[in-house]
Image 1 (cartoon, rainbow, N blue to C red):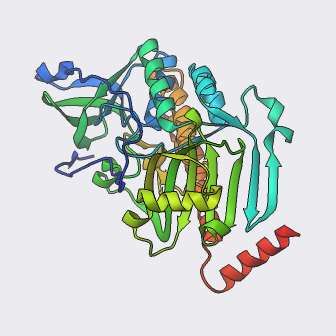
Image 2: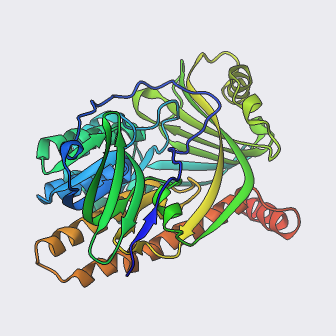
Image 3: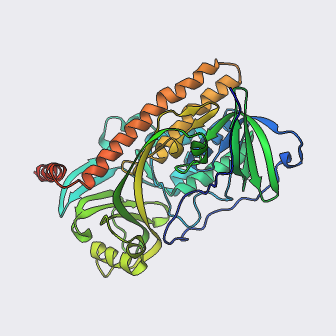
Length: 417
């Protein structure tokens, strides 16, 4: 196989918001890598590109298994500077994984547990559930869900990786070029102290929805972008709403559009408001406009502190394959979903959990390299299913005029009865 080179492609983290800065994130020091002074590229068994929740879960899993790896991230912090709390809702399966990794206790101490969900259409409650009453609840020591801002989990993972050793975290190390052949992959990395090259047996792409590796490798994927628009507000209240997940399919205080309401850590509530398709992002995220929206929902007498606010648009994507040569795609670099049903970050955590032990077994000689093929076999179908489910949910929340709307209105009318 001839050497393929992918260079000179600009890359940023891809997150753009109208306003933000409500969260103070930890920062980590840049340490000049030893390869800066090396004539020949050093070889590493595993290089993880991207220090979000998926990449850090993989790094922590490998560290726990005693497998050496390096993780590079172009930033010097967890989360995204100037952005929202992002992922907030973590499932029992993810919490079980975090328990094995040794980060569950701080997550449980910081986050908010909930099990009751209520769904409304107008002023009517049309559906409710309590996950603690379901038969599978007692099969795990972890609760059904914990709500916590994503950057907290990422920071806990960083602390745990540093405690375990084996995996080196390299901050402000930006991937600028990549090439691979049948024997190895070569990465060019830019830092504040200069550029260097490293070789890797396995490269894991955890860079997210704007993956540079996916572009450089020209990875085929299916994509769908709708005209659904949302505005997210992270707020604190003087009067505390119930610790439940509330969903309005048609909210009378939001022009009969959908609304999500969740409690996170620090007594911060995440409120997702569905906007008109032609809504101006700058206007809907203005503080005075957001305060008017909150007053319609909670009453004008409620005192509100706005922690962060910003507009959002969703899209869905799914790669055709989760492995290309020596590169493995996971998390949002493999699939992008709407955040309905908490299927984004949680599936990234599951991707990392699936691949980590397989890499460890192959590198130790305990399994044949063919075991790594099962990562795609198992996780690609999960990615496709999550895209299917979230796309159906998005269509239900904003049906097209005609038969889709007739169906949606009929379903709501029947649910009320």
